[in-house]
Image 1 (cartoon, rainbow, N blue to C red):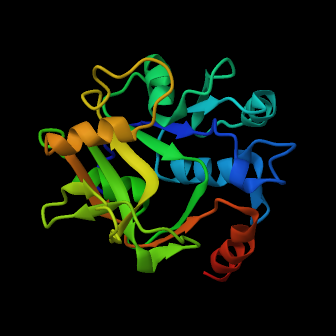
Image 2 (cartoon, rainbow, N blue to C red):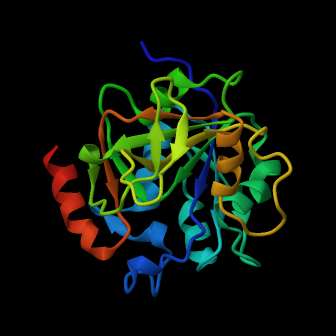
Length: 240
């Protein structure tokens, strides 16, 4: 039996410039780049809908009219646009701009350019089962290197036996990678900086307060950051 969802709202982060995905993003925003014949934003929203999440707030900046027009026809989930065409606010600033549209505490925040092949539970229900607002300001879905396809980096976090996260130490390999999905409380967003800033600013404060946690994903996660990652991702997804 599935655990209840922690929220019925997801913010989909879709405003980035997609520089690493060039030349495919010269004429379209990155969320409209296709994998397995569908734009990545559609694969993202399909997963949102399949989990039973009713509403999505999608932020836009680069070639926004193309993305807005594409999302006009999405009924499940119901989509609201957070418009950042005047200034790209990065991940943290984007959440602050969208907060009046979200109207939920907590809410899911989901990068539009990461793909998943689920294990025993879908990603939203797995996170929801681990969510504890009394202890957590944010709960991140993280994945070990063995389950991270196309990923070439050193990792992002260490995680202790209680699920508390700390940042990768200098010169070290961190065993867990952030997948682009988290549960965010309004407490995490308190006293946020003005203008553009990354979520890392808020995560660091939560780490200092012992309130940043992770849940280890049991499926396969695909980083789709460049054109070279598309073909192997398609091969893995279509053969599953």
